[in-house]
Image (cartoon, rainbow, N blue to C red; front, side, top):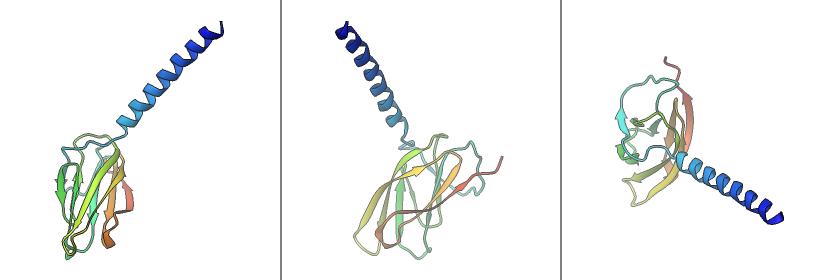
Length: 130
């Protein structure tokens, strides 16, 4: 009887582990298909957006979701799904580049900065345009 109780418990543990793996995989934002956008308004149910903040003279180039952006530009995800997005920023004044996973959320604009060689989330703004 103990062996059968253990077998049932192990089966549940396996299901829980499988569910956690699926959740971990689902927590990634789309890796490709992001596009530059000039729209300033966004929908609360819309796809996540990422903007690079810096002075226009900063020689920064960011890559996120397969799109390239420079200071002042934003990219939008192909689907309304948030998660963690790999962002790489290259500084043209030095040979350094930095990379980091940034949490992006559906219905929000995440603004990042990379001055000083470190990628930082400056703010997250909720979309409120219907």
